[in-house]
Length: 250
Image (cartoon, rainbow, N blue to C red; front, side, top):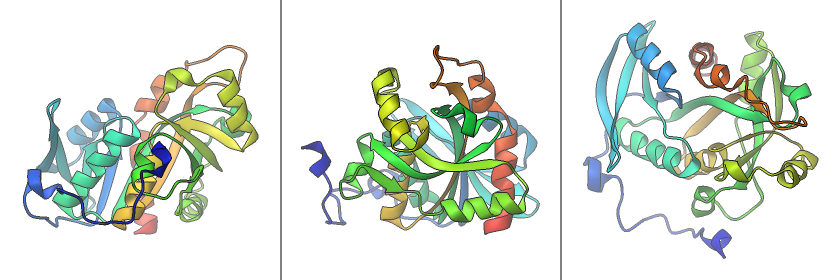
């Protein structure tokens, strides 16, 4: 079975070094965004220099070093989905030495009453994807281990938030009413496409993951509603929340 993919052997046939050379250290902390609009706005606003890149047959994506109030922060645009975002995190870690990883993005609301007007801090992720089963023993859920730390920082910053489980899926077009109902009964309040895979990768490589989400589309109404998705994806406020998190946590 695919869920039996995990094994404890640490060394693979090849490592990122096959493509990127020797490990490098630049700084400890990275912020990643899924939004090309946020990415472009930050690069225009903040002093930066290109220090590396993630690449594939699809093309190359730059990794920048930002200077924000004297702090050095790695910044890059992540691909969508557990597999691609997880592999890019591994490659960024190899090329920059990051130990702390802040990720934010949009999610679909499974409990719109609980999530409306609030940031969402995931506590566990339902592993309805493939990446995590290669990096962690099989289980339905993976713990998002720094959720309480992120919540405490949001308290200090007076930011509205709700904690709850997320459903990580590879197949957004198979978010059926039956599947939504099952996840809701288990306590999932949002659905997204990356966190289970990212947490498993971070656990494997001893990277600290700090994550929060904003809901855009709504899945718990009679009719699917995507009116808030553009703002949830591209609103720049999430980047500045991530910077404040760094100031509080690190």
